[in-house]
Amino acid sequence: MTPGITGGINIAMKVPPHQFEATVAFYRDVIGLKPFTAKAPAIGFELGPIRLWIDEAPMLSQAEVWLELFTDDFAAAAAHLAGAGVVRCDAIEPLGEAFRGGWITNPANIIHMVREPDAW
Image (cartoon, rainbow, N blue to C red; front, side, top):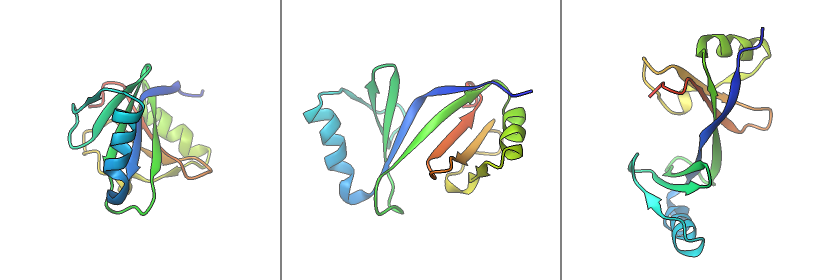
């Protein structure tokens, strides 16, 4: 049985320090999206029904986009993904011991957080 996995509501853009302010200014000043700081120091923008989070990432030399997936049962989803050969990469950003979710990559090395919707 395949566990239910659906698209989430968050996209994270990890941006190196030398591009961070200009990237925030692009979405705020050029595009005209109103920023919010519910998860500071990340800066968020409403992107239709999606939330775009821009995180300053000193360890990166170029920007990366990270996506979110939801599942009702992370343990079952993790087992399904492992059985399909999907690579786990939980070391990239700690989520905490009690967090019901984890990090994976797709074949093109795009990071995805797979989590239960109430995992926070």
